[in-house]
Length: 86
Image (tube, rainbow, N blue to C red; front, side, top):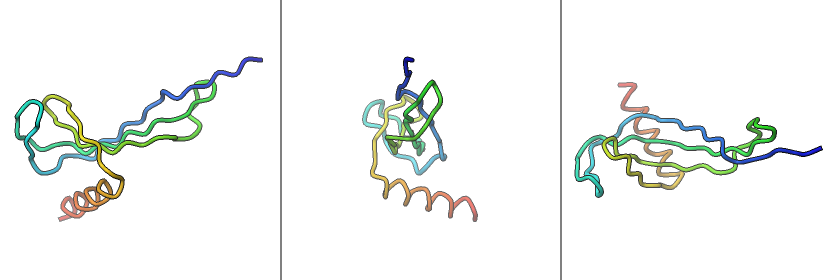
């Protein structure tokens, strides 16, 4: 019996926008998006477990992205949530 597995399933969570910053690629200065991308291992096309996570800041104009560390992502998320509760 063949077993079909893969690792291409992606879950993209967009938290929202942060302060404006200038993009090095397109030169626009707009609020950037905070994004978490999780890549899953799949078995028979069913996501089984996440095996890789990327934390990104993405330009809303050209889509250029900067990868950041998990702790920096958590700090931005907590700052974002505290500002949105006010």
